[in-house]
Amino acid sequence: MLGILGGMGPMATVDFMRKLVDATPATRDQDHPGALVLQASDIPDRTRAILGGGPDPLPAMAAGLRRLEAAGATRIAIPCNTAHHWHAALQARTALPILHIVEAVAGTLLARGYRGGSVGLLATSGTLAAGIYPERLARHGFVCVSPADQDAVMRAIRLAKAGAVAEAGLILRDQARGLIAAGCGPVVLACTEIPLALAASGENLADPLLDATEALAQACIKACDTPVRQAA
Image 1 (tube, rainbow, N blue to C red):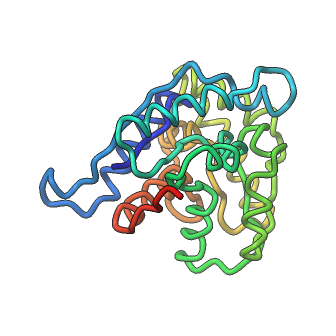
Image 2 (cartoon, rainbow, N blue to C red):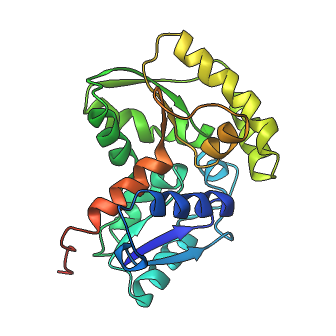
């Protein structure tokens, strides 16, 4: 049973659920994996915490993890890139495997035939400051490149969270195209609101754009076919 620690944000969690369904090679209801969703929208802002201006979200995330565990989850997914700054701390609190979104992205990059090189990164300032992507992607030979105008990216993310997805998408489209023009092969959409906004703008989300939400959904489907790590 997949436990989804969501609410960061709510719209992105719903999008993740849709992509989870889309990623399942199902011909009937019973072919889909079971899932428990916690829409924990009370978790404090992750970027504000990383940048030093907000409360620590770890206690609220850990409480959500306990609720999913008690409800019968056997593995956990977190459809929020920035929240993965606390992945190790959360993993230390449970014997359940917590899938890592960056590892899911790395697997997708390799599956698409990329073997190192520059990767554009559209993400929150918290994700960039925490170094969540560069450290893990470097293990596979990738170098992360930030957009020309990170303030514009954050403005777009805030617009998307407020429901103005089409307006946000136009801003993000320019930043994505700038990264491609700068020589990046793939561009990772490393905030779960960004794919929603770009889709609303009419941008094609196919290669070279890589949707981290979709990569995590695909990794979850694969993980549901593997044994669950047992508690010590």
